[in-house]
Length: 464
Image (cartoon, rainbow, N blue to C red; front, side):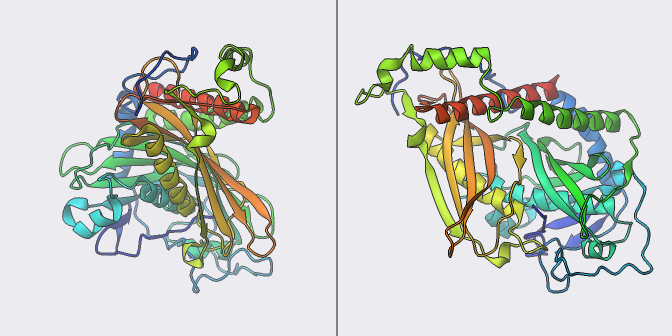
């Protein structure tokens, strides 16, 4: 998806967007478990600070010492023009050459949310359940990642709207992960927050933007709340990949972040090859399914009573549909990916609360690929369901998947555009477990278990 800046300029007096120094002012009792599950669920899931806080000192240093430089909005604008059209002829005379090398600090951008100073800002970001609207933050993160990527690719002093003069553009290819390290479960509305990001890994034509949500203390060190990575790709209007600057890595912290990006990219390839869409379940997973469907076959019989601690996967469904309007478009005339992230998150959050029957906290967004663009004027459907929860022992976390699809109102053509995978944690121990009923649901159940286990291992790695 192509990035845009959805709302950073809507309330200039309420929040501050900076490229470093420069600023834009602008309820049943549990029964005996059905079967064993090896999914880890430590009491401290979602809190992993020791290693990452050491690395995040680099981000604080970039905030204090990095170079300035403003960038333009990524939102569609008549002054920008219909970028990406095949008949567009970019202006190429007298242009500053694109940079050939970059440092991490060269792409640093940040957005400060000063809730303590503005009640109107609190109204925009604090939801009806007295929690931070994480969906709004995700929308802002996608914009911020796009800003950092353009700042990396374009010469110093250029704005986003200058990209078409070079005949190039950037797309958000994927969100590799977003992990909460210190949950904002009880937000007082007076804690100021900072969203920051910079390019921490780059190849010939693609890059990854490392993003961070942290506190903005009046004095002292900031605390990391959430980290994530957005994968971006640089393309030519004429077609094909556009080479970008080589990333120069300096110092131990930068080296560690670069290695983290490389390992994550290699891990994605490995997981893709082992995906349940391409390969059958492994031996342990097949044994688990056999134990479930054969060992507990009495609950799968037609008209059999459902145990009080079981919820069938299809019974957790939450669905929504809405028209896509041009107000939420990016500069290329498609619906902004961050807006889709917000809508899907809010649908997933509702699904999670209905299942847990208790307040829940966001823990992670698993790998997300923007497979198809969402067209203006299409009908967006969001189909959400709980796809996994542990079924042995006492647990709080579980997995929610949201499938986004579009339908052409005049032809009825339907396309699946994205699938979002979220992990939530309930405030109290889960009293119910979700189970599949069909083979297709069983594959979704195993896939969600894999994703949840990966998230637990990632957050453990940060705390090592």
